[in-house]
Amino acid sequence: GAGVSQSPSNKVTEKGKDVELRCDPISGHTALYWYRQSLGQGLEFLIYFQGNSAPDKSGLPSDRFSAERTGGSVSTLTIQRTQQEDSAVYLCASSLEGLRTDTQYFGPGTRLTVL
Amino acid sequence: GNSVTQMEGPVTLSEEAFLTINCTYTATGYPSLFWYVQYPGEGLQLLLKATKADDKGSNKGFEATYRKETTSFHLEKGSVQVSDSAVYFCALHAGGTSYGKLTFGQGTILTVHP
Image (cartoon, rainbow over all chains, first blue to last red; front, side, top):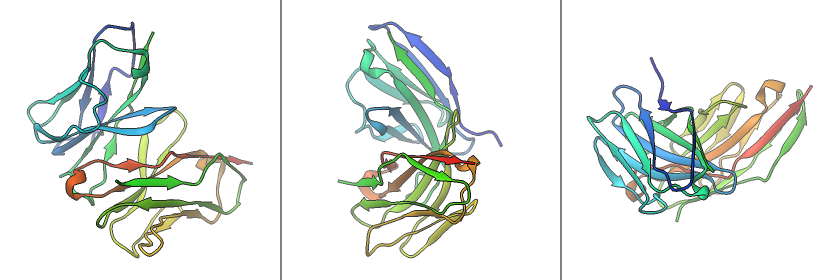
């Protein structure tokens, strides 16, 4: 079946603009995650959804970052007033139930460049 | 808190050499352990996993054994190929109050020369 998909694949924006990143998880997966990959910080967890609720938002770096998930499926990550330090690859992953033993399947990522 | 430490890279090997990438972890409870691989220009994909102590994960000739006594999950392959050139990430999922998140090591770049 189809894997995790993300759009856009690349996004270039100017400092101060808002951006929206989209994630389509694997059908039937109830758990969805956002991570960020950057040279200086490696792979960082941002937020976890179980269904439409987000029990763990502990990784969001500031209140400029928000995310939502609707219908237990598609998720959007919004970054307001982008800063240059937000430049990174944003990865989405999904897993069947969010259990400790579940495999998380990753999408190809959105490369965000803030000029 | 939870953490994963991988051996520093990059690692450069000749084809058919033996590979070890060390990974140690700190976690509360009984985490699951994973190795993910990122080939050039591609996304992260699971290589193997182990969900309890003494389990051995294996895939594509790679193996790793979950050692609770040494809190380790070292990745090994007996004979590497050029196509194994990639970045390898060790990760853990602690469960419990850590909910769904994976905690990753810093990644190890492997380059295999013909």
